[in-house]
Length: 332
Ligand SMILES: [Zn+2]
Ligand SMILES: [Zn+2]
Image (cartoon, rainbow, N blue to C red):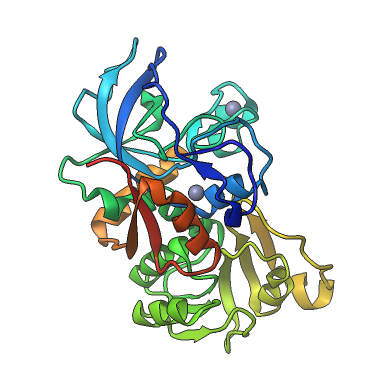
């Protein structure tokens, strides 16, 4: 399923096409995709909120599949038949100052799965051997797919928020990422406050142990030591800062956000409140999240669609009708 002309989901921007099976270049492996979870970034690619990097492009960067062919100069980490997860960071340049200090999420020339190269909305994809995550052979593909972006980015956002054990955490928006983050935060003994649109999302948050749940514009009743905004809504920023405790941090987890209103210094930033963004992730973030996922263990709520239903899945995501994460079944 490829996007050729980004546009409103109502116009079904994704089209089913037949493409040749890609050839793995040196350092790459060929993966037969089993499932691919649907991320809000895919929606931004399909609708053109993010400028196209490749056209047409098969979106999707939460793919679980099997290695079916090793390209030249591979085989150090993987063999044919291994299960792998393919995430957003397709490759980093490895030579820029950020890569050199292990901040590959800030790479000057990164390439992203399902944006710069074809991703998991396809039966086959190629990826560098060094940038995929080996998964246990018994992996439940549908359950683990949402961890590959929603989980990893959520985990990075949680770390960027500076939350410590036992503190109060606010989550604005309760989609795929937040429903994973709440499990980690509760595992760390934190109290979680959730403000989100939609009765379904509020019910899921309550069911997953949030101590307070309100609608998207509601204000948590306690000062929070840390908060994360997942909703791509810039107008939430001043409100979320205003309920942060002294020294607290607000992390913005989206790859895209509408403009933020002006910030009144005294009520939003003074008392050393911090505001930070979250940009992609390092492979180390992925390794740590997948380890945590086994330890806790993390569970995901998923709704399954066929690959051909990608427009439907994205449309439901756009209209807040997915509880947890949507996952496309690509092949058996
Ligand atoms: Zn780099
Ligand atoms: Zn994503």
